[in-house]
Image 1 (tube, rainbow, N blue to C red):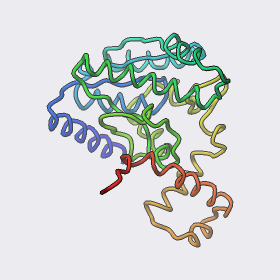
Image 2 (image 1 turned 135 degrees about the vertical axis):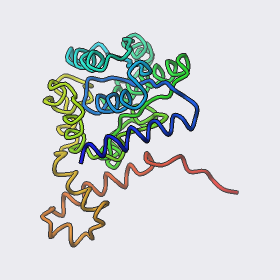
Image 3 (image 1 turned 90 degrees about the vertical axis):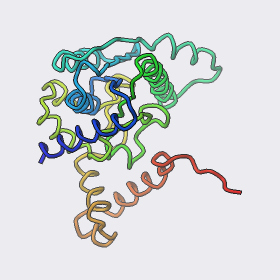
Length: 251
């Protein structure tokens, strides 16, 4: 029932922003479906005029990441600005003596974007809107203090496959609906290709494990291979620290 979900989440956004006394919001628009859905929900909740979308391409970003983000801006009638992060990222990476892996470089890009977003939020007296979905949160497919950072997240309890249904309901542009999920870190990169897991399969597993609270034996009876179960459970356990505030040593 996507209409019910829309009403609950827009009500959540309005209520939380009223509680903290902030009437404006800032969101990073990547051209992907998660940020588009978060933007549509926020615009419906507080008005598009109170939402600033920030486009933050790197030199290797695909052209569609910008044009798709711009299509969200146009359809919602929200304010936007583009901040190129290439010089910022390369200035830091250029000071390193060793070769930097794609993962490290992607983390630097994600955290640089969050620096920009939080600076814009300070200028606007606005809150940063999160875009991480439930699947990414469970699997740890996110950069801590990067794309996981936010003041409030309207889509964190929605699985990736449900995001597509909600996006269609909200009227997200077709070009975004039809493209493969990607962090756009390098040419041809896709989320499913990098993780080696299909969202449809892992979402079905996560729903059965957490929402339905199925036992390992029941999960196997549902058709999940033991190697798949072990792999996903390992990802969940390994990245648990990303889902909670840092632990504090008690004295």
